[in-house]
Amino acid sequence: MTQNIILNHQEIEHKIRRIAYQIYETFVEEKEIVLAGISKNGFVFAEKLALYIETISDIKVTLCEVSMDKENPFAAVSTTLPLESIENKGLILVDDVLNSGTTLVYGVKHFLNIPLKKFKTAVLVDRNHKKYPVKADFKGISLSTSLKEHVHVVFEKDNNYAYLN
Image (cartoon, rainbow, N blue to C red; front, side, top):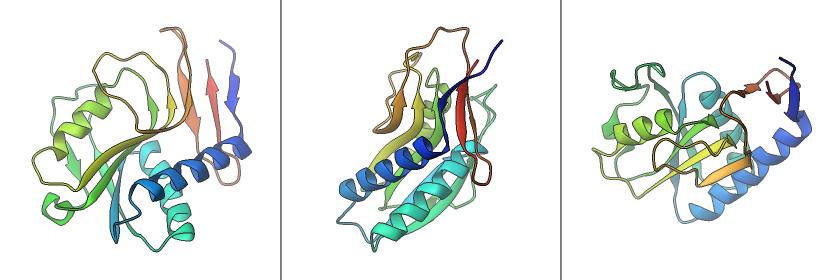
């Protein structure tokens, strides 16, 4: 299969900046928000969003890594922050690609047991192949792809890109 670049480094940076402004507009009243990035690329994406949000606002951004078995979403979900420390704050669950919605919906489920001021989701690429009724509140790009195609996001120093194969 061939690689088709769908987002280059500059386009990804632009999308991250735009999403950071959207998050700021949504949480402008908050003193602190939590970006909960789904392990690996979702967490890297959350780190990049945090840098932009802290640059454009006075909102304190706390990062939290969410670990789950994507092949078995029924397995336990864990976070680097105790849930009690997230209570009554604004939370954004972040992932790189929204495929079927399985990862995002089980990530959302993990945080539903605590009171939150606001709960939103952010993804860089939304593939529009939902198995669950979950949506991204903030998204970089929406793609209509075939089920056989896969979207991959690569975060490298000064060379971020997303491709379809």
